[in-house]
Length: 207
Image (cartoon, rainbow, N blue to C red):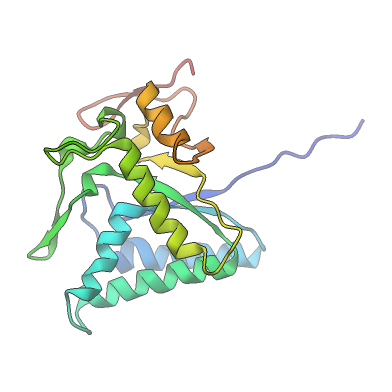
């Protein structure tokens, strides 16, 4: 009898720490370079879940800080690494930590809104008080990735999502926010996972 060969999907989250702390080179660019080298040596392709809000914020610093500053150098390194991933044929999909929405950079550190940590707790659409909506976060993240990848890969589709801290939720607003943006696959729900902390609240023990 012929044995079926299992299929594995290798994924990585491309991000700094959720708190906004960390060194771009030590904690993001350099480790990712090593991962890409290993993948290439085995001719393996992976999916990189790009934390769009954070990565866009980090890259935006190149337009604020002059050349030879750490902020400008780090932004260029991230841009180059993303292009390198695409050229190597890896898949880039959407990862979101909502606390990065509207983040500001002051005196060498990021100011984030931890009231928005859980994607599952957000409203469907962005509110007048500035609270980001699920639909709008996914939409703008998807558009950003499309703009980044499509010039290199005309067949590219952003159709997969991973919520920060696994906080995707299972109510109708979450489902509609994903489906209405063409998201076909969610990688946030992990069977058996349970958390009830200040930042992470979910129960996947029976999904």
